[in-house]
Length: 295
Image: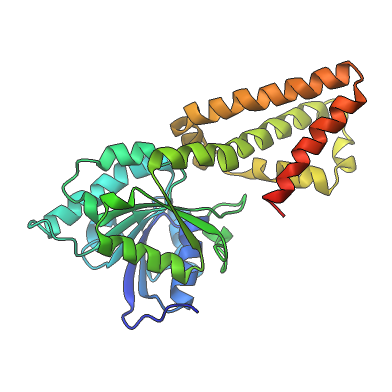
């Protein structure tokens, strides 16, 4: 049963794209937020977010941190490296005694760089690093949808570095979004997401580029594409502005996954070059074991 909230929160969302916008929709419709303010650098996205009702107003960070209970940073990680410390600086000015009257959280896809950026900040305890493991290949405020996070996993990182009150607040938010919470440190997070998220995008980008190159010579190749192809390259439609900084920030882990993956491709290549039917069958059967994990 969803937790009941007796006090509506004022929420500030920095970045009004797919994730930030979808959070705004559900936090409002489920009664958690009475007022939602937004910060968005892109004027077209800012206007759209107001027009479709994702937020009550679009303003600046400096203007609205003071009147917000919760600040959610939902921007590419490169921008978050500047914005998260900036918000903590503003909070330090509001609470010179070091109190934690507001909660700051981010929803970025990489964590180690952010952890390093705020490790020694005097307001570090007011910040909770998190990553809701949900999304689509679309971006912008128009992509925001209700129920995006329903039943998905959310990772809270380095929770011992945050105050218990801040962690509870973020847990409440993900409870409202009907997500199950997993706890791990930032380093483990980046390793795990390299395998289950980041490298999946690299594969999709690479396959899309391969087929687009072939399409230059054979115009009808896309007429033959079926559901299997569409599902494999779906992620290739993801935003370059979002995914370039993710891959840059987590490149060491992604490169390690790439080495392992290349080895598996080589195994398939050798089996096919040798016309080794049994080796091909064994590789596929071994891959089928993923059914135990993903149904």
